[in-house]
Length: 330
Length: 290
Image (cartoon, rainbow over all chains, first blue to last red; front, side, top):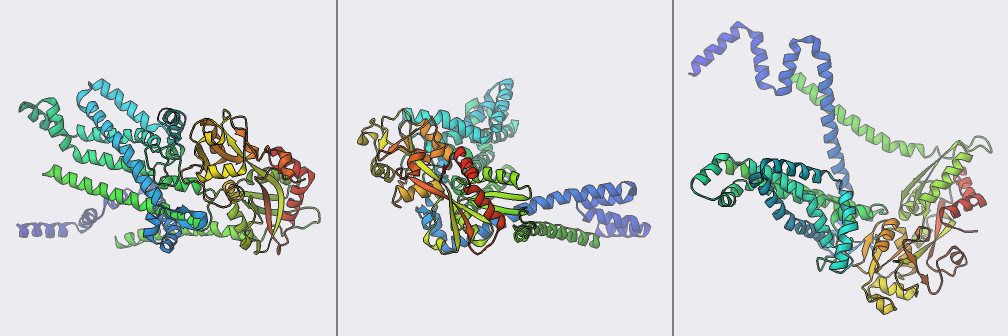
């Protein structure tokens, strides 16, 4: 076999050396090189095409440089302070008195996690059930209308959510449940509404991506529609659903404006759902206006911790996707 | 093929370097422009050049109005007004990054040693505000302190309605909070569970929306949405601040280096202290020192 192929190659080589060269080029090079090779053959179009190519490359370089500059800047400003305070103290100390030189973001760290879990706790079940309804139960026209409404929900600016929370949710909590109204609960309600579209859209796509054959086989075996959904469709779509939850978690941790407006921002670990709390993002946006020196460095350090946090979430996401692919492959 | 690759890598590096150079030049041009400021005072009466004023965001809006007026009188002068906060204002005045630093708090001892000339341009008072429906019209300074320490948690302890007090407060680093801590709190820590809002407007909105709330804002920012309380029997009003009977007040200070000889900065401060400058300050809501 090999001998025959080699013989053929030599024949081609002898036949047309130039053609062979360009073939090797095409095989070796990536997409852009291949396009370039084709372009070289038509010289008239060459100049404008190379301009476009440079423009595209410039855009890519600019966005990568932006990422690099931002990370270098955040870490160069933040890391020295973390080093001088000590990572453990910075992350877990509950004393945040930057003017007196006490930099502990423990309360904010817990605050971010607490608020995120509180909002996920109600938004994930609700979003998942909505997604199941839209994908499996609702008649197609209803599903389409709901899809549009959910994307509308995703398009509302976060400051509008915050304002809604401040004017409607906070007074409701104050009048009916007590406290000041600016609380974990208000934050969790607003944040939960904000992450609903992410959960609904991605888990609905995952559910719809489950092959119809699975469903038909299950029904043919005598399982009811609800048994099919619970025992077959949901497990098959599980990696997509987990992706939805992790993405929603990322959105919840990063959200700032709406959270600042409704959570009261006291730098303490809340002792009830009606107590105020401060997240890491709120901490930055609240104090950046007046911070100077070490105080400012501490805010950058808060940003660095957030950055690492989001990075870890993204890694987790990649891991889940790969695991999901393996699962689907089997 | 190979040279193609090399060229590509090369242009990547060049682009990167260009971007870096751009960042550096923009950073350097700031430094380069500094010595220029105030130097070009060619004629005797015609001022030419630019100065930078940075610091307290409480002073910033006043400085902006004053600078606008000053620039229309001296067309050759450009005044850059920046915020950053009192601490940064003091810092930049010391380092020389700004020609005038603005502070809305008294200088700390170590800051006083740095060779700065302080000029008080106006006064500002901090009003303690509650919801208009609050029965109380007056508090003792000590009561205010105890509320903000968390020792008094219910309005009925002060003769008001039986309702928990919602404490509203500014964020760490704010000049208003700094002044409040110094004058009212005797530097004791503010109750950790108090709500934090990061602007005067946000504090006022929060107090206006919560009938159990108490907050502190600049006197100039008091309007009909909130009720300003008498403190130790004295109403927060311009006259009471000027004659010193209303105690919760603070100075607006311009800082210049004693060593530097900047004609534009000097004549700007002179303008601010003139009757015209003080009138502008008064109209904008600060309390003139005259």
